[in-house]
Image 1 (cartoon, helix red, strand yellow):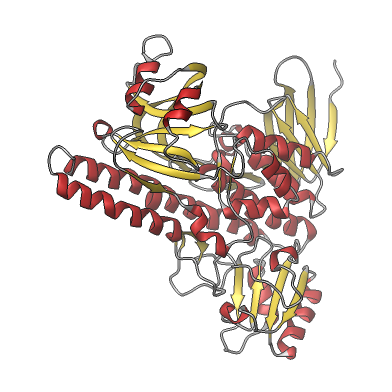
Image 2 (tube, one colour):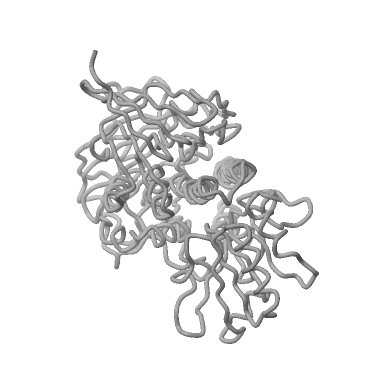
Length: 532
């Protein structure tokens, strides 16, 4: 009988794409031992997951990989990350900017970025390799998961070839994609909405297409609103500048690589002919799915294992990386003794409804809005009305960027409003608000706040009563939780925070603010860590 190598660890992660790697890094930074298993030896060269929001780039800042990621981009930084929506064809007369994420830049520590997911994954692999407490196994996959009262046993086999090993962990995180083995083993069910659309993914080279788009400098992705598709897009995106592209579009359900003219599809979608050389032709089904829970005992899921949707708006990878940031500090808290089972439960209670809102209030809604436009208006039928509707869309696109504000107003570990719900719909604001992302600011000594925040909780004290500050420090020491205090004045714009005391979670979300009412620092910290 062949000997099986065995490893003991605190956290085992199944799936080493960007979400799994980000989770591993965030845990390792907190001193947690991690074993990560990924079936592919190298990142897969499919240019998906390209649009990284300012919030996502904050994660890379805290993971110590922001500059490495920006250096890995495939489109020069001075070109820009802009998007454009066009009507009829790519080169059509009617167009407007789309997803101008730079508009919300003042509310985040850093700006957005754009690069293929395989580049993002390569940067994260290199960063993970710098941690001695992360052990990675590329080219392996999970075969069995057995949970008991004290932990989880993971049976792992070589993805291609021979080899077996066994991993013993206290918790397992499944970041293993939409066909998640961890989710299925955990018995976690999904709610699905199938749009019954087969989508093609084309990756191709064309220098002439770049030349045709010379009139749209700084634009890197384009969605074509074709009337015959009734709200679904034809989507072009740059992989690099001038050569390589990718393209998504609905095609007939019986389409295969061999029975369809994809060159004609590209030309019809663009409204012009150009050179085409295919690197990849693949297919995927357009559907929404969300797990009914993100936790089952000692098993957790994140990223596409927990939710999937069409790549409309670039929400997918960003949502998955936020899962990782949310889950990491809670797992670390539980393992280090200052977080509770209720804190672990809050991961699903916060992240699941935020994704459901993202899918419903932004992605599906955009399809419905586009369908209403093309079904009711066109230059051929009612030109004046069409042009009025089209002009209004530019302002709507700006509003959508501002209103995408994932928040945890209904979380049991946040001092949110009565009747609040966790949602992706909100409004960016400089004020510190429980359940919302903290807007950064500069400290009086010149440092940026997000360069000072650590891995634990932070109490911002702006011209605050020293007695209240001392109460938090004493309560944190008694409860054994990490808390740093940042004291400053309310000058130079810091008064926009609107509060004197702000408790910031390890994921840069606000847990509590001093609203002038009497409070118990211990009670605040207990609730924020699920120990109320």
